[in-house]
Each structure stands twice: as structure tokens, then as C-alpha cells.
Length: 275
Ligand SMILES: C[S@@+](CC[C@H](N)C(=O)[O-])C[C@H]1O[C@@H](n2cnc3c(N)ncnc32)[C@H](O)[C@@H]1O
Image (cartoon, rainbow, N blue to C red; front, side, top):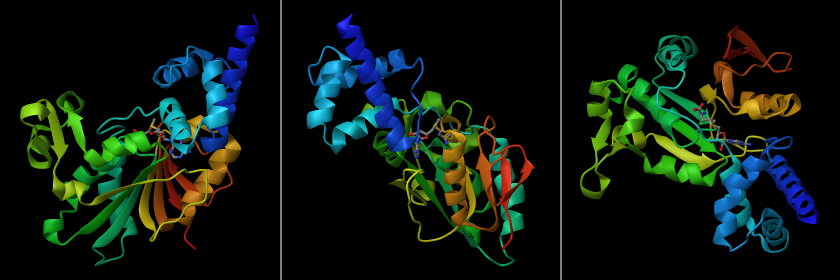
């Protein structure tokens, strides 16, 4: 009984830690998930239960250990070509409308990019429609809170099964097949990967960028936050959008009722007000 109470208290401690760091709510009914996701870390340090592990975290846990906890408890599900209408909208409507005539240089931000599939998909569409060979000069900034997914993203290497939905000619043009120990994997070719820069950003903390963006993708992350956090997060994103720039959010997310300087063009597509 005493042990159960200690385990429940440990789960609450982890939930508070994660909420404090990244505003993800793991409170009600998430004890099993917390224990399952932290099992590997507990075993690594030789602990049999969460209560013991939490004592260690509280007294001796360094920043690396806390980062490991955040990495283990964030949900990183993503895919190439996910919610594909957004990429079509990017190349066919957003960029033609937001770019001044004769401007060939622009910037896109994939905020909460997980293991890189989203920013690389943006790169694929831009290569097709805004080819650097025709003088276009674009850069993609990509960020996430999780250092683990950012490492995978920087590598740009994916099992071929993850590329099943990719058109054959895109596979040929933009991916390199692995040989030897890389058999069964594909790497994003430098023509795209050189234009994508990854860095760690916690969207609920202050951050800066050296330039503004014509379009920001911030998809399938806000769903984990309460309304006050969503409003704060979107207002901060808007500081880095050019006037009339676009914000794209996940199809199951909404900005209804938030006080933000954006107008809704259609569900999940928003445009910043002109100044
Ligand atoms: C479900 S994935 C979405 C990936 C991609 N945008 C997509 O739609 O496929 C959510 C990502 O948000 C990241 N995340 C969670 N909290 C965050 C925060 N406070 N700041 C930045 N990224 C965060 C997670 O690490 C995870 O990689």
C-alpha cells in the first residue's frame, strides 16, 4: 500500500516536471504511460521502481537526465507527406501571394519538427516548385524540444518502409539508397538537407530567430497544451511571421477563441494581419 502511494507520488512528480518544462499534461490516467516510457531509463540506472528513480532524479539528476525524461515522454509521431494539402497550399497559394515580385529568397520554419520528415517534405515540394536551379534561394529552419529526435532529423536517414507513400521519381531524385550496413535505409540528398537547419527550441520559452518567415508550420504539438499556453505560443510565433505570412497548424487543432493577430482562411490555415 505504502509502495503504491510512493509510485503514485512519483508519477505526479514526473507529470509536474514535464508540465513545467514543456507544458505537456500527463496528469490524469497517464501513470502507466509514464512508467512504460521511463522503464528503459530506470533499468539503465538499476532502479526497480519509479519512486526510487524519482529520488535519484530529485537528488542527483543532472540536465542530461531531465532531457532524457522529456525525450521519453514527448510524442514524436510524424510522417513524410503528412496532411499533404498543406504542402500543396504552400507552393500553390501561400508563397505566390506572400512573396513580393522579383523576390527569390524566402524562409520557412517547421516548429516542432520531430525526426525531420516535415521539414524534408517541405524541402521536396520547394525543390519541385521553387528549384534553386532556377535562381530560387530558400532556407528551412526546423526545431523541436527533444534532442533525441533532432539527432535523427540531422542524420536524415530513414528506413525505406517510411518512404512507401513517396512518388517513385521523388525517391530517385531526392534520396540516396544505402548500401552495406545501410541497406534498407535512404538518406535525404544534400540538395535538400543542406538547406535545412535544425536547432532545439522550446516553444513555450522565449527564443529568437535571425530573420522572419514567410510561412510557419506548427502542426500537431499545440494539441497537448492548454488554451493559455496555446495563445502565448501562437503570439510568439506571430512575432516571426512577415506581415501577411501564413501559419499552418494540425488538422485536429484549432485557434478558436484565442486572441492572436491572425485571420482564419480555412481550418488549420491562418494568415497574419498586415501591419
Ligand atoms: C506529434 S509531433 C509533430 C511532428 C510534426 N510537426 C508533424 O505534424 O508530423 C510533436 C512534436 O512536438 C514536440 N514538442 C512537444 N513539446 C514541445 C515544446 N514545448 N516545444 C517544442 N517542441 C515540442 C515533440 O518533441 C514532438 O516531436
